[in-house]
Image 1: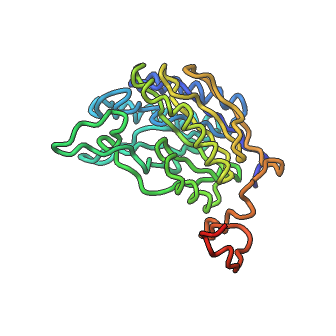
Image 2 (image 1 turned 135 degrees about the horizontal axis):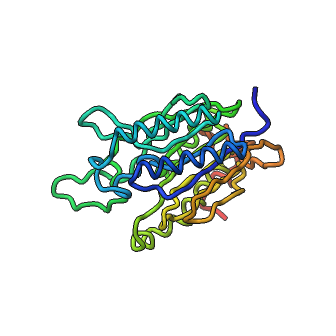
Image 3 (image 1 turned 60 degrees about the vertical axis):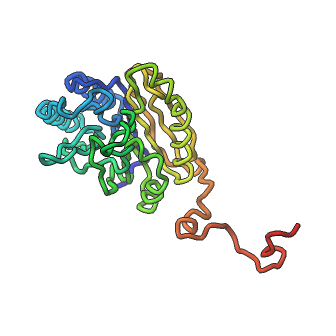
Length: 301
């Protein structure tokens, strides 16, 4: 049965290369979110593992056994606190294959019930003779992209998750809308390790929140946007309701938990509702067109 609301905890902390550091923050914020009545706790991109090319230079530096053990501890905490956990991490593939950049969907029984793998990874792996790309644009040199959407249900609400650079592709949101998704959890890692790169990429401070607000309003979805809070994070974690209004935002560069309620109401206006289904089907106008020579002559005045 669908509940009248879904309480969401959007979390941020400074993601580091040390898995134990990340594990401690994640477990503490799970406990805090549960104590505040949340049903879902949402963490940023690679929250547990750290992000290659940001926290560390090469996946050879990643301790896979420590990552496995920490993931197990987080699953246990989800079951103990009876809370869903959306955990950003790195998912190991077979030998010789680059891993996925993933969000594990962990149920309130403490089981991984699905996994979303980032579909749009930035940049391209440099080819022989080509100049080296900047580290922040080299996802494909380290990660293998996924190829599927993930939809799951919590307390009657259809939910999904995307990762960072996916936000640049509105087709993903339209596809999720077609599937009936009501709540989207988007995990970002818009954070840098030095002031120079932070200042160079500062347009994202405005572009990412504005884009998420637009996606929420055009697709009428609730959205949780989580980010690392390292010293040079580009924006703090925030929450958006379906009309595009940001209802809560954390303080930059400080670990914290933002609790928000998904509470459907007819007072939250869906401006596109009368015509959205037609637009999705390919009819890109409202009302009825007219057969009039002054309409079809596009050069007159």
